[in-house]
Length: 99
Image (cartoon, rainbow, N blue to C red):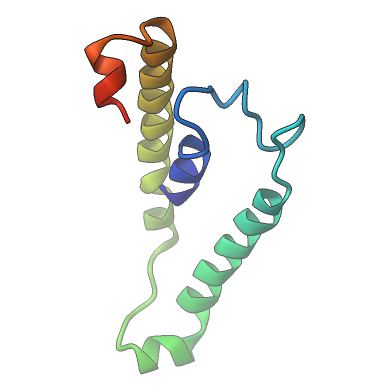
């Protein structure tokens, strides 16, 4: 979910294709570093028994890690549709409400 938000919150009207974070003038190579670090922190906190005993939590089964992925794709798809409407109708009420 956080990755979907990371990709959609970059601009108000430009698509991910137009504002590509991996190459081009708007690239942000820190994202390539941040994604594996966030995976590492999640796995570290989940797998190390010391964290579980200190915070009184338990291990999260691996299948629950994959539940937010469809929601992240839906977030990106909805925001791309919103950005398309804002680009097509820049003076509409929808464009003024969208941001």
